[in-house]
Length: 149
Image (cartoon, rainbow, N blue to C red; front, side, top):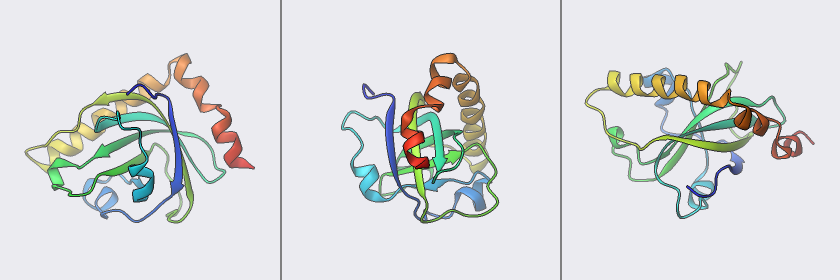
């Protein structure tokens, strides 16, 4: 993807209800128009970066962009896992995301356990990569400051 970092925001909508319940990994989902407006050269797969909800603090995140082959989705989605424990749901709030890097293509898995293990691995890898100076500076980007106004 030539457009990294890529910044986007939109209201959090209800997803498929699998992140927290089946996977134990809650996700915030963007509405269709945000997904539809991704640059044409965005490959499906797993990315990492920074996210904030409303005017809240900026946290590390991973985001899955694609069709989630394990679940055979027919609609492309953009599901963000923010590495922070929130006290309550934030449906309807504005989600601000800065995608800074690519981890891997999306793929199918033989079991739910294999999918969960891969996501946990993605989270750990993203945590390490986001500690680099080039990525840390994006946490302070004006994009997130605007959201606080």
